[in-house]
Length: 377
Image (cartoon, rainbow, N blue to C red; front, side):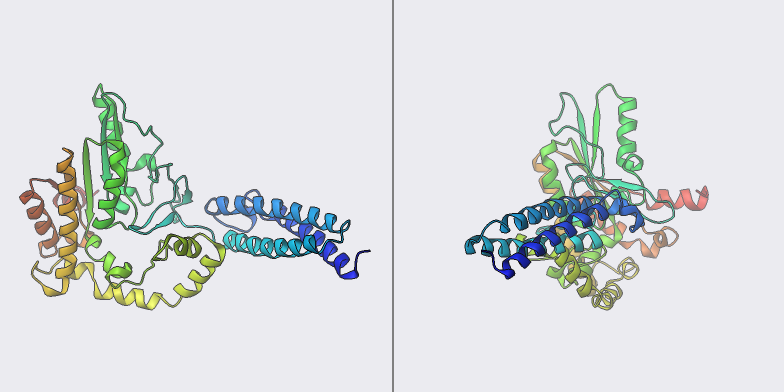
């Protein structure tokens, strides 16, 4: 005969399972628009919660019904363990449905990469969608294997190359691809490997990853914050370890996953990062883009910045030349650099360094200045 405690536990499991199934009907991609203003950013975590809640809920109900017909202590103990684990998993998925997952995933070498197949809103007044392909690029899907006679290029860089605030069709990589295909009989595939916030060491890693596409040329899109941002963010350089990407650096794959890909991890990160904002602001004040833009190459304050950047570029140049891949450096200026030559010291340093390595350089500082000030674009 079953004890009253066993009967109560059976009823509790059925009740919890029914509640889980009900929550799945309330928290899912189809109802998410009622409580998430940008539901597209939560579609994946809402779908995950729906699946877990339905499966766990139904299993709990079945488990509760089974307990009504058995007096086995072993089954009771297993049911208790299952219920405990199920509630932990379900609460974690519920937290994830609240916090969501960013556009990026953690990477031990590069800190973060684009989340493959992610779709996220760019936000702002001119809201557009970022659509990341299966390779982790803000680009369309294309075959891994290079076609016969196909011309391929890889464009490395940060948010400018990636296309912050524009769709993947509007990026300059896509525009170049369309132009080449309209002018040539051979097909061209220009691969946009840019990622917001990437600096030169991350672009080197991205270049190695992109070798699988067998590129004919590679471009490096350099922006001035590449000189300072790693020292603000990267813990290995004294940075705070996290920024707007919402990815916490960790020393192992498991720790990184628990911190960045679970609901409890996102909760801990949210609480922890509230105390990081002051430290982050101090690091940005210490490593000012405007200051380094008018500082000579030999200045001791930024010597490590330049040493790291030029070393990374040397590795990139050497790796490309070793594989007979044509490489070009694209220099994108800050707006305050356009009208004042005293802020253009980085352009001179980068151009001289690239030319000494027999690397082509396109410095957009003068061209952008003319477009803005002379032609009023």
